[in-house]
Length: 386
Image (cartoon, rainbow, N blue to C red; front, top):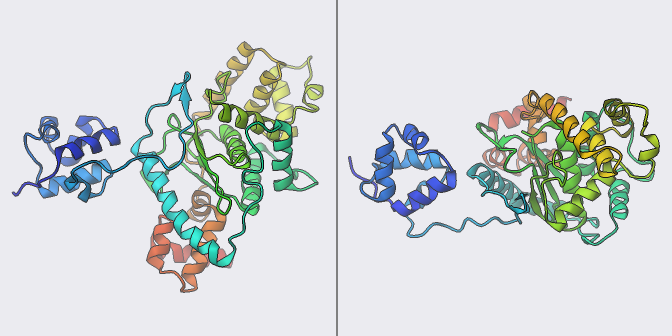
């Protein structure tokens, strides 16, 4: 069979970008690893069929293999992740494809909002990184909940859903997903990132990694809200188990301070902590009071020097072991629940309404929501009945 005249340098770039073992790539193309090695070295070339299979396995367009130089692969938003004071390892192809998909959605949504709303959100960039932490947290609380403050919620999980809903009502596009689009074979890595924010005055956006433990997601959401109020986009990997949250950049430290103050205000916290009760007992009681997870309460107690680092680390270890069983895609069960969580409620409704009214091709609408046209129609019918 005829060889595909691909550029082996581009193939090497794609393989490195995908971060897949040589054996895994070979298995995807049904050849031996040494055959792939020869392709990478330029000693031989794959057939057209094999090159197409390589493109699928490495998540790149087939045409890329015929370029003379690799395409620009720069991130459009700042990478603020750190590990031990150094930049974190390079983001994988799943994250990059996820981000590309979200930016594809955003292009359509921006045009839609320009026609129907286009309102600038005054809270985006209202403060700088040098602003008073309490003032920023109070402003987030006022914007989302008004003068009456947060309404009652039965649990911190309900409060997380409530907070996401209020953020959407304020004009923030909130998405939570644990996979790339709707591809269950492409999970997102919590070790790579926990969330990101895109600071845009018209379409402020927050993405939460749904593969993370639910108990950690509420802090990620609050952290990303702080990003928007400071007018700073960025990819985050906040790790509340580390004494320094695993971050060393001034912006990330500030966002953590704002998130903690927003979720559990310092004022009154020490007075509600019972010295004669155990850490677990305090965490249970105050988690119900503040509507956050037990670990957020323990973290706040540690930050305010109420408990020691050793006690916090021991508590975190016990809590995190419980998370592993439920740290999966938390988008919410049925297709009808999952679709608006993965894509954002307002965005999903906008796309579905435009499609069902005939102002947007069903095929285009389905691609925006990572689903099939028939499923989109069924979703629209179900929502109307509900």
